[in-house]
Image (cartoon, rainbow, N blue to C red):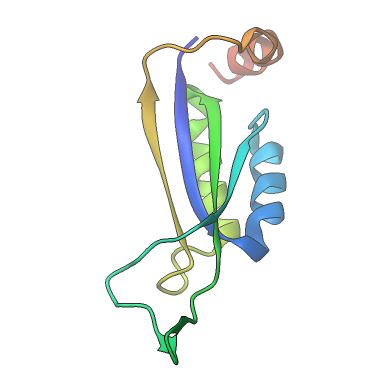
Length: 116
């Protein structure tokens, strides 16, 4: 079984809805890193030196490769990434090897076989 790592940077008020949607799309879990900060094409606005940008969370999903694109599209839709600039970003990278995921493999084997 091969895996992809999905990384999503989302506004912190959308974290729970993105996590729930990803789980419904087939993700078996996630790691959340709170209070990430990012900069886009335009410099963030400030007010008397204080940043006006919203906090972001970084969500890490280790997912089976055949399910990754569907989960990525679900994350994008729920996070509203394409609706307006600065709402978030998500991408996937290949995972060469992973350990400690025996339970996920057992859980996903039947699901992936049905899709193939």
